[in-house]
Length: 453
Image (cartoon, one colour):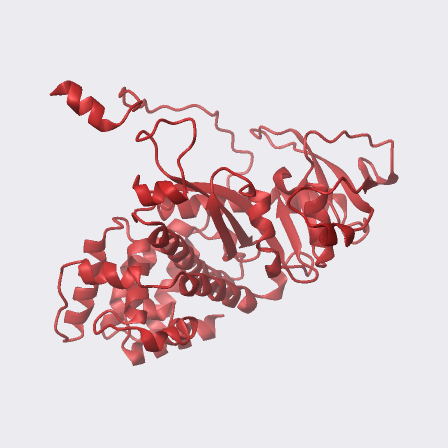
């Protein structure tokens, strides 16, 4: 990984690309565009420059178009070129012209590249583990956004924000996003498991899906097995538990047979008939002894049935790592500020979503290279520290700094910032800082203004 990263940086400097060319080359961007590249009209904002400036905006603390364009001006001046206009109109137009499929393709390729280059020992017992979880984000309250992604029904019109539901598939080994889906917050086939079913083509034989109880339904497990993939999920709370039944494998570890339920409305008859009449699953009770954890006991369901190859203790440790998906989503929504996007039309919102995921993958790429360099796993490296270090060191590529010296400084600094290891830490769930005492908005802002006039 180290060698390919250095070659990419050296090639980007030779091609004299924008800062982010070191992380995402112009060649890879053009490949994602395909034939669309020939139809693109732009003198300053070529496809590569538009994507690079977009990435810089997603990774900046300000997230403003003004700052993104200012960065492009600074780069052009440093290169001895004529500065482009500081007006953001041309950039916003070029950004709006980005096809959604291109942004989506960039996400898929950046994630797959990092995972394929990662050391094989980072995998769990030789398996690729897909950590799946769902969340939501909001967007500006415009008629266009409301029409496609309506706000929560319980809120009055004008008092809430359009909201979208997302499902993200992370690689447990390196933390990159391999695939994602988004849709409305409510309605038929908008739940997390429904969105994840649209991502099933990502699955390969031998993959393990690691998820919470939302993905533990009979059809969810059966459809994974149909593709040759396994599951490690938490058991749904409505299913009864009795370890006296089934085939005993160990203490609080047994095999069960679940009969096929009636065909759900979303599944056609042909697909339903192709599924088996019985599904054999394994149930393991996991006790959480660590102080401070809210959950003291949980039941894990898996289709990994071999107790010798996959001991109950190993499954418990694997399920505990499911929490990495929550931490990765926090990095996306809080560190990269993806919890509320800024574009005012659905097409631009979706592009902003995809590009945030691409930017996240590029950060994860640097973390993986730094982790492999010092012989640790990438999830032990700080995401926020990597983002901060990149923000300071990327502009140095415009100066006469040797490439190897720059790479050494970057990777050593990233590897030095590990996530705090605080075993048995216990912090009560209380807040010290008091919130402001403003009232919640219960009607459109115009109504308040008219009453105050």
